[in-house]
Image 1 (cartoon, rainbow, N blue to C red):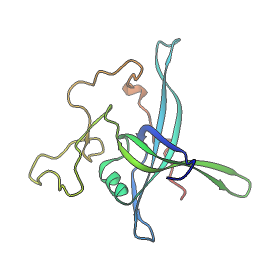
Image 2 (spheres, rainbow, N blue to C red; image 1 turned 90 degrees about the vertical axis):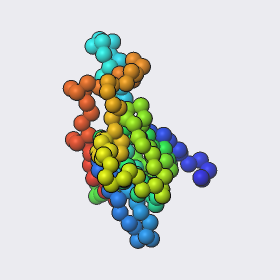
Image 3 (tube, one colour; image 1 turned 120 degrees about the vertical axis):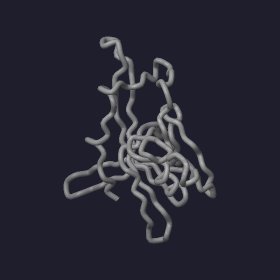
Image 4 (tube, one colour; image 1 turned 45 degrees about the horizontal axis):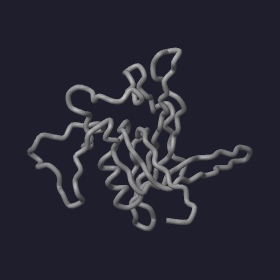
Length: 174
């Protein structure tokens, strides 16, 4: 850890597929976009509404990258912690900024889903056993039965209010 580096923890939803690649040094790198949407109570409407959206690119390295690719997919609730980076992209007459996080830890948000952790050497369930159903089909499943009881401040979205990540999920430029 460096002096005065900006460490953050973000809670949100995976907004793109996790892209896994191997860089020139032979290390694995996974990159995905996530969105964090503020929820606030609107007294005039008498219900919770979406507020600001924050889209961030997340980069994971080595074993974390491989585990993220095997565990998470688009639409999964996620918690990310790591180093915040601000990138400036300049073209002829346009200057843009791009936020990213170099992740040190990534995991499912267990408030909104369940997970079945496996250690690195654990091969998982037997091939003949029942497949794991889940969000993105990668071992994270929605809570069985009725929806969990949540504090009012969290107010889960209804189908009509669900966050659409498709319209704003952009490819990572680097």
